[in-house]
Length: 235
Image (tube, rainbow, N blue to C red; front, side, top):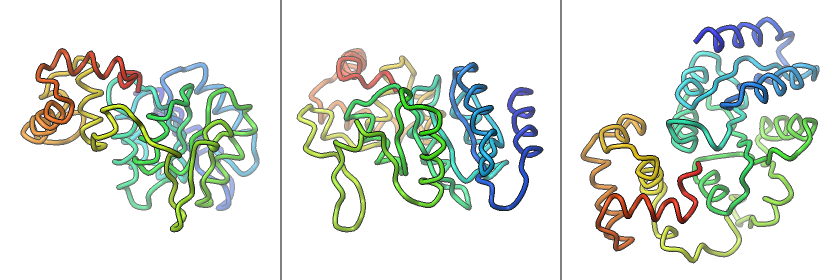
């Protein structure tokens, strides 16, 4: 907890002027967080107002610090990043969500779009590219790494979707059902899932029943195995 308070004070003390973009970093790797904080703080128009190592602390700091942009790791311990992103976007004024990920699989990109992301940048990009991405998404303009951008289609209304379709059975699931499936793959009980998603037990139970019906899998252990085979347990 002290780490988050210290990093928040660091960012607030470094702010100088109304034109600076306020950034919150959420990543469970301390070395990467610290390196990115120092690199971004060296930009004259950016200030890191806080850092967090998990999704729950990230949501809390969004409410406390009101960043313009949240740089959100896609693979966090505990609560799913996609669920956290939706809660962050419910805060007024809502931040822009820029996912930072070592993964560039179609499922992650699709779920990131569904959760309201404005950008998705991979961790093999140079630090200066991340700074550019933050400026773009803060202005409401989408930013995606090249290997991600090539898989996207721009709709007539300006929205983005994945090019082509997912041929697996997981493609029939709603975003909420996918979240429940991911939690099941992590070994969480329904009560724990309900708490993590901020939903009632009955809602989680209903989603689980829908999962079983759609996937024709009628055992929680088999559901978890299916999720792992589909790569849904990684984020």
